[in-house]
Image (cartoon, rainbow, N blue to C red; front, side, top):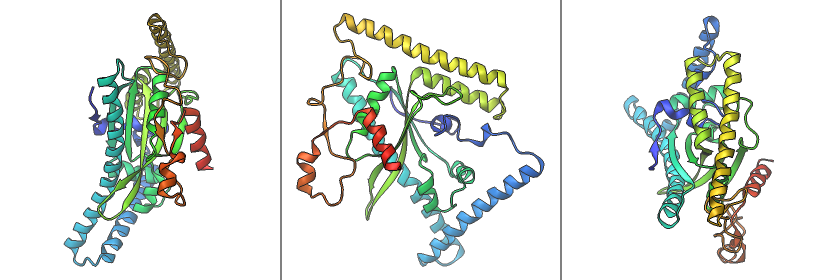
Length: 331
């Protein structure tokens, strides 16, 4: 089970609203509405291009061809930073997965997919969000340009993986959305965690947003088919199909619960039965036995000795702590 990069058609796997980020889900504009939409899109492109031209001029670039080369460099650098951030988080996930595969009898991670949004998709989101069509505006407003999806076998594993990943001290958890405990109205379920990861470049450090979605195989199956249905209907899905999709989502959730109960019964026979919120091969290690980690991005006033001392021995975060901490940072 190796990580694989999602195709362009599969980039909808990581939307932040539980559905595809693509405008294909939205009713297609016609007539004057279509003309206004195309005009708005052209305006967004022109504003971004104007900023890139201005930046090229500040760099001392003159001439049409050199400026075009500099614009391409700016866009490449912009996208590369997100790729580097995604690579950093993927490395952490792969370390966890390989550790479980080689040293334990069970791995909570079934599959890993990842993708970078294309420039077209980014600009589409700029229009829908109404954010400033500049590189700086995009960096601050759109947080799912780099996206990773982790698929687990059981609901408890989804929380377990989230805890292990978010406990790492060089990841800052910025936002948490728990659509498992509070599903979307359409039935969508998943954990969404937006993190910031430091990317160490040749001359500076960039803190890059990466969205991580964690859900079970059953949740992923439902979400994938729901997208295909929306694609078929161009976003205009009949009400009766909406109801059937919600019903299917409830059945998928029931399947998750049933499989977890079977898992618990089997593990009880081995005297390793996990309880709620624990992994499938027995209890999550006690606080004293869990890995130690420092706080997310220690305060600047902490000295190196302070950070490496007692303050760095905080036990790994539990999911409730992660959600509360992310919520307090937003407020």
